[in-house]
Image (cartoon, rainbow, N blue to C red; front, side):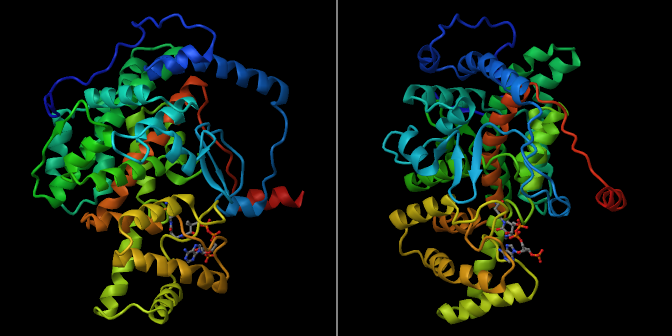
Length: 468
Ligand code: AMX
């Protein structure tokens, strides 16, 4: 039976500490077969704690790099300064989620019935455990997130009362911040919970947040673009993306498949990017997951980070507007790109702080487009840009990476399925990014990572230091 999500029922949150974990055998196989993610983590955590303890005992004082003055003024690029377990970004190859590339995830992660794209539930399981989940494990996560999906009335009221000129990302951030009324971690901390139990509480908050964030996102969408008419029902037998799409009002199977892929590929991009790093930093102060992810969303809302997907579409639409319906030739486009650069702006969707090749997240979206919308005029324009922008950026000689990133493509796919509200695109990125931030946060608390506090220096102090 479908459930209505504003049912004022308390969110499903298993009592922490009161549940006895089953005795597990020492073999990894038994644990992997469990469909309870928390149980699998409970088995893995002591092993990992031990591994890191021994590693630090042996290599704790080993140097892993140097820091130059340029690195300090240059946004800390290349400084190895934090541990992030869930994914690693290679400049040439792109992202690997727990060691698996995007094509491998597309092949190996479970799909929806009749679907061909990986389910984000499977990706979350992989990020948390390092193991490719079974279909049963993924179905169990879908069911659990559906069960936990409801919103307390004050969040609904808050969203209903925000003026329509508040950007969707600000609305998302405000709702998540306010949702920390539901934080089991914050409540338990106030009562003096033992450190050893932190991860379980963070796990519960994370699972609840992931279950609720699509409702918040869909509510924002319907308030802003559908006159507030909102169908808030959750099908307990549907997957997370399908339920999200139906709340948004998009029921086309192809769009739902796109959303599954989208929510997988935007989830995690190692720890140094602005949103992931923000959640890590804020979480290290033991701010609860709602506050930490809200902070991450504020970083994602910047035009050099997640807002770039909105910016790309605004920029592409600008080409058409400027030409007044005339054919977009390479010559015209060439001029438009140079005009953008000469006016002191960046070409959105191109360049990256770490990547030095075409982003595989761009490539897999291009493959989706080739399969489903090869004749879409905007998709053709994106392909045309791919042929022109890198050479122009190289000629300009500033950008270290002239190749497209994830944001160069995503908006074009969304607009094809009639989701034309560009300002909303970053919210979808945010729903996905929560998966990466939270899977790492569970581990951060399990490993007892301390308050983040790097050393800063003034120019005066730095000059004195280098002159010694
Ligand atoms: N267009 C024009 N100039 C660019 C550029 C682009 N796409 N990418 C980099 N540059 C410029 C920088 O602005 C900088 O100029 P400056 O010396 O005058 O300050 C110079 O090239 C060197 O920059 P960089 O070392 O190559 O990049 P970075 O690590 O400082 O910044 C990024 C990376 C992504 C912010 C930058 O490439 C950019 O602004 N791209 C466009 C915005 C974008 O697509 N952002 C999304 C990134 C992916 C994501 O996080 N979602």
